[in-house]
Every structure is written in structure tokens, then in C-alpha cells.
Image (cartoon, rainbow, N blue to C red):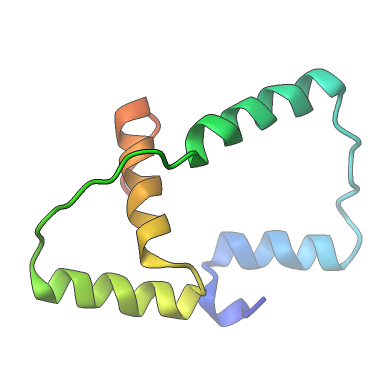
Length: 91
């Protein structure tokens, strides 16, 4: 992971993990089941949607996602999901 792509808080967390200050905790079966269901509902893509946005915005999205190594469609779908589920928070 490139530290220069992280903000200060993320770098601090990564440093703490690398120093062994954080320990992994084995999740409970109920938690795993909950998150598995959430993942299934979140990432199931069973509908197609077409949308028009400015060329400049699409170019910026694609550049940002190329830096992160994430397909831009995944980012857009994730943002839309967070918005409609009420969990979207602007930075």
C-alpha cells in the first residue's frame, strides 16, 4: 500500500498495524453472517443504468480510480448505494 496516497489518520493506523500495536480479532459467526448478507445485497448487480455526466467529471473519476486501482463503475455504484441507504457522508 502506498503511504503517500493516505491521509494522516490512515498513515497513523497503518504505522500502528505495522508495529504490531493492533491485534486481529476473530469475528463471531453472527457478525460474519451479517456482513456476508450485507455484501451480497450491496454488490449484487442485477440491473443496468445509463446516465449522462460531464466529460470532465468522468475523466476525473477515471483518473482517481486508476490511482486507486479500482474500476470507476465500482466507485459510482458504491457511492449510489451509500447515498440511498443513508450511509453516505461527504468528506
